[in-house]
Image (cartoon, rainbow, N blue to C red; front, side):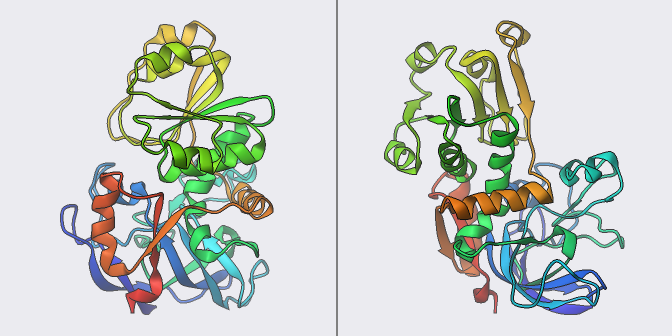
Length: 347
């Protein structure tokens, strides 16, 4: 074991503060990563504040990790010292179940191991990327291609793959009309990715205040959902709607915007249930689905796609001392579009 600097939540209500945590010594298949940047995801806030269930504190969040390999275990073959790498929302799985064998480790039937706040294989609680170093088994470390800077790459490890995966799975591409609900940390990446895939992209946001940004990021159209006429105008329009907001919305109204056999896919994760009028599904043979992150293979595919199309997150880099301020600004939707911690400021 060795000690590293970190920022941790002491409780569900207390502000995050500097601390130190223990990292395990390198095993045969482990990689030691010097973390350079860590994105702040809305999931971090939900988790540390107990919105999704009780946690073990102190808790170091962060599952959008970009850094450099500084040491590898003796049997590591996938990475070497000096490699630019990333770690996303999981750091292990059983590797043996049907889903893992398909490369869908995020849906491990025995439960994948989250990057923070999860019981690791040795019984310890995982700690995340708001820290200077991490030790991760090589199979859950991905390569960040040249051409993507580490700071803009960090959010791709959650926001990028969380939106790339459903866009790929539900066939976003030329001739398809895709709507993105919400233009935040997830939504702005969904717009960029859907546009790069060749789809016709529409942003559905509460107001038009981000319209200029949405069009710049690749949207073809932008509508305010606070305008009741929007739902009349767009009825029966979209093949795919990706809902990125982590707050309750009227799902049944959005289902009416789908074409025959269209799908509304939730990637935002509000703590509250989302009731659905079943007739909104029956009429039009519509689907209401959910999607998490992608597996390791698909995450690497996403990073390579972003490098090919020169895509990265829109970020605001902050020192560690501003993490608590950033949390409040995220809750107030006052970020365009992802906070990224400069981990060098952890000391």
